Length: 217
Image 1 (cartoon, rainbow, N blue to C red):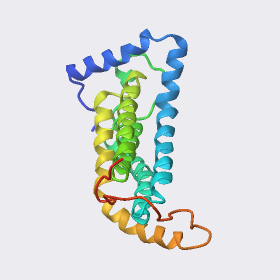
Image 2 (tube, rainbow, N blue to C red):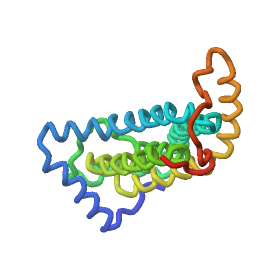
Image 3 (spheres, one colour):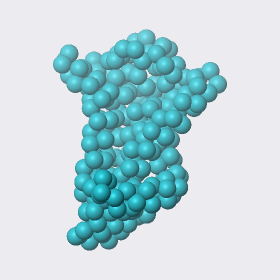
Image 4 (cartoon, rainbow, N blue to C red):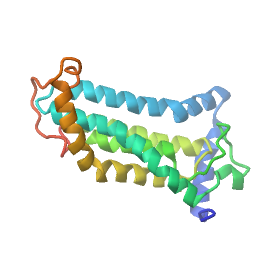
């Protein structure tokens, strides 16, 4: 498949959102570029760490901590799953067919569909929501911001972002039962040892819902 068709509606959205970059001062473009390329992914990883710190002492810590680990693993698996998808679809970057776009980051010459950043962000958000509702909602907001940033930066079409969201959500949800069935006994065994006892220490607090369903934040 050489490329996806670019419907007029998508191109309108692409130019409208990317046009926001034209209104930004130089420092504003630098901020958007850093946030869209590194800031938001790092913030999402930080949220997972915060989630682990919050759930590691819950009564259901031996189930919740694997959920946090799954958030990071789901991000990696989403990235790996996207490698063959990109190669098969082989959609050029937006600026290759639309040179009038403002591109805020250089060196993005690979294929466009789907967005790695959007997919990874959504995988983390979905997996984290299964463990901690409040942090999950914050992660969803960051994932949405990640998708918008990629379009503002001129490196992805809107459908690249939507496709990334769909891929990340599918990986995080469909593979969660197998992942948690594998990670839970590993965390339980590790937390019982001297060296990994800090990983999960069930203690005080009330866990009204386990990893299978979102608990109150």
